[in-house]
Length: 120
Image 1 (cartoon, rainbow, N blue to C red):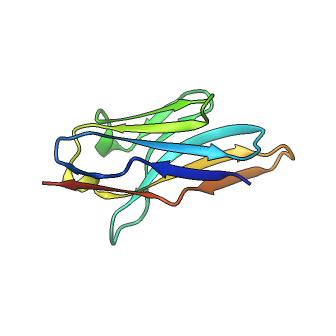
Image 2: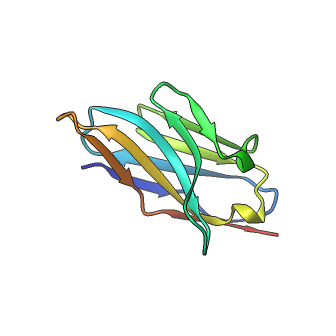
């Protein structure tokens, strides 16, 4: 089983920056992709950014140019650098890991979430 832990959420003023971290542990054969999602009160969870095993990235249009996803394979960690934050970025941010186990089965794990609050 894969455990996922996020950190880095905080209260920040509009225009500020934050870096979220997501570390995974457990036995995996390979990582398919790792992504950051967010969920604001009363809204559905949405994909913010994803990075594949090959290093390809994809972003939610509203964060394009402001957020950057990256990873450190040796540390089993994915990061989300968030710049020029806006009040509408306020949400709980979740990390998701898609992986393949040593048995060849696909797996998917979520972290507990980290709160990002952007004040105007």
